[in-house]
Structures are given as C-alpha cells and as structure tokens.
View 1 (cartoon, one colour):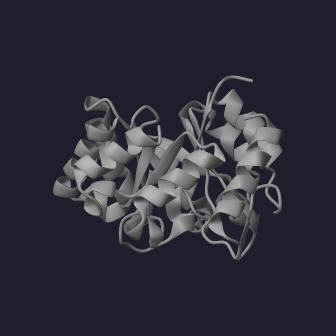
View 2 (cartoon, rainbow, N blue to C red):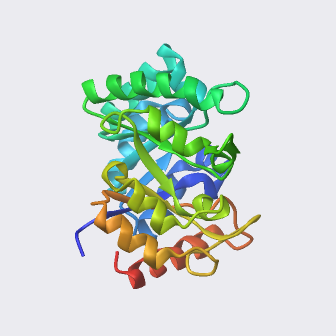
Length: 249
C-alpha cells in the first residue's frame, strides 16, 4: 500500500485548542498522528508560539479548514494563504456554499471556488471542498455536490471527501471516491451512524473499502475526524489511530 500521511482534525478537542494548544499537540503526537487540521491557529495564538509548538511536537499542518465566507472574502483568503505558507501546509479546505436558494447556491459557489482554486495554485497550494450530507439533496434531479463538481475545474477545485457524510447523504463512499478519483487527494475518515459519532471502526461507515479507494486515488492525507466523544479525548484518538493501523495506515 502506498505511503500516506495520517492526521487528525482537532474539532474533537473543542475549546481546549484555544486554552491548551501545547497539551493538545502533545496528546496528538503521543497517539501517533503526523499532522493536524484545524482553523487558522494564528488567530488564537502568537505565530512564534505556534511554530515553536509544531516543531517541538514534530507535527505538520495538513490543512486549514474554513467556511465559505473565509474564501469568498479576499482579505480573509489572503490571510489563510499566508498562514499555510508560513506553517508549511498545503491544503486550504472549505465547507459551505453561497447564500442562495436551491441549486443556485452551488452554481454561485462554483465561480468563487474556481477563482480561489486558481489563486491557491498560483501560491503553490491546493484548494479542496469538504462535503457534509446536505450537499446530497436533489434539485430538479441533480444533487448539489455533483453540480458543484461539474461546474468547478478539476485541477483547481479538489475534494476533501468526508466518508461519513457521504454515507449519511445516501451514497456509497467507495463509489463516490471512484467517481472523483482524479480530484480527491485528501480524506476525512469519520465513523458512526446518522446523528452519532464514534471512534473509527465502531460505526456503520465502510472504512476498509473507503481506504482502498482512497489509496487508488493516491491520497496524500487520511485525516481522522470525530466531532465529539463521551470518553476522554485521548482514549478516543488512540482507539481511532489504532484502527487505522489495523486497516494498513
């Protein structure tokens, strides 16, 4: 199996990322993750401190995850691009589309995303759209996510495929990955059932098949994401990291 990097989305830590970044990064490293994905850390901690902590814990920034308004706004977009370049990250990940009714929201967003993707490419970065389940709603026979993919340039707008939300949205994540195999370098591996988030391997998502498809897509990052947990976070992230090892990464 080709080498792929394994990261973690820090959402599972909630507000602790703001109050104890050093402790969070220490736990992430001890669990065996290579990189982190979160928002722009320069907005919560001084740049020098962020850089110092990343080096101390030998962690990289896999990507920065922001909302639609943060990429549609030129000033905010520039801020996130500079952040990624400063920390040595590569992926700018966006969730959400334009404010409009029905399929129009995706069509408007597609224009924005093509421009953002071009800007990122010029800066040596990669722009990805991250799906949830609501993009799988059908409008006049067309699902929003597929309309968005149709209208965006594959070389400029890649996909951060969230296999849990594809499943909840009613599609097979393996088939979805294979449909967009040439534009899917980055994946969120999340498990659970509708309305429930679990450690990897304890839910209903076909993680094994998804990983095989992701490897066929030459995935660069597999990022574990669990929105919340009832356990101590360190237990959940260790369990999930161990499950990924059992799957082969």
